[in-house]
Image (cartoon, rainbow, N blue to C red; front, side):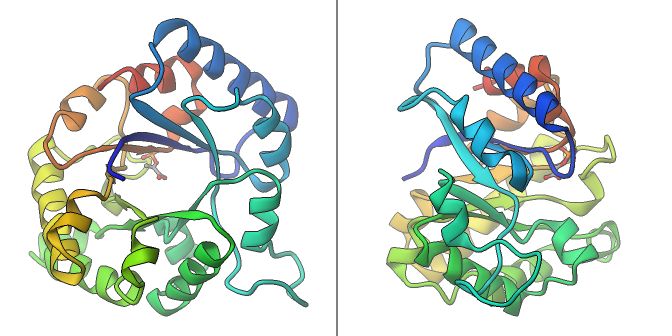
Length: 254
Ligand code: PEP
């Protein structure tokens, strides 16, 4: 179901005490300052902190736990890896897949990501599937072609029932961690294009029911303008998710 969502990707940051302090502050601020239900808040700490952070989330409210990655196999001899079922068993509801840092530094391609999506869904997790173009691709005028391919090869193998569980995140790589945000017009243009592709691959109803998040230097100052666009349903937040004041202000930006 399409909903307003803010997801915080903590990446490889925080120690356990820092993670616990951060989530406690965020929970208190959100509880004190918002009326609650119209935004889904997903927090994605590093793997070792999922359980302790999850324990600090109030049950049945706006908060949900997510992971930053999972392995494509259900179990087995894959030293150092974490399966989707493990994540589900420690309380995760969501998993980020296809983040540009995974694509770039860990060579995750659309074929691998399509397997990860299947594994996540089979374990009952809801994927947040990231797509986005480099600055070079944008300057060459190939943004739409690039996104179409990422969606086609990574996502569109899913059945209608599987696709129903997916949130899409548009994250222009040139805007991630750079302080350079897409303008609200640029974000809207791409989000509308993505929704059009979803309608083509599935149907208009499914496309309208899918949340599409914007990610890339989204902060407390620009979130309101970005989230006011008709096809922008919220944000996937990196740097600003590590600051309780900023993250709470972003949540309050709808
Ligand atoms: C991200 O990595 O998903 C992200 C959007 O990072 P930042 O907000 O720091 O640009």
